[in-house]
Amino acid sequence: MMEYEPKYKWQETWPGEVGLDGKPLQDFQGSDGETPIGRIRLEEAGPMKGKWQWSGHGPRKVKRHLPHQGYSMTAREAARMAEEYYDTLLANNDLRKQ
Image 1 (cartoon, rainbow, N blue to C red):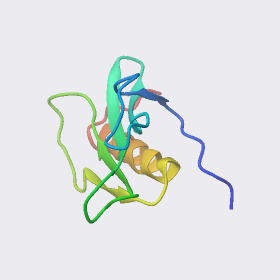
Image 2 (cartoon, rainbow, N blue to C red):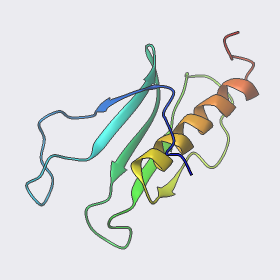
Image 3 (cartoon, rainbow, N blue to C red):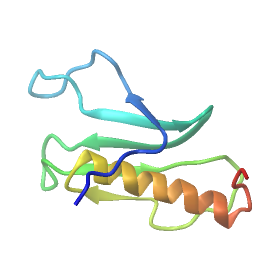
């Protein structure tokens, strides 16, 4: 099975910041041009330690849907979930660019 290739731009949320272990934070935000589409981050502690938390975003003042966040085993899978949330949000609000 091929690894998912994100379709939107992803970059570090806080470049240069370190986590509890002193290593660079694994925290990224996605965007579609100027529109934030989501965020993914590696859980460093607690019951979800080692999993990637994702949350979906999109334009303001639109009808939202659920789920808008969750957990995945890999960063690529978390990015896919956030991107799918964003694409569905656009479709449900007739905002998809043609």
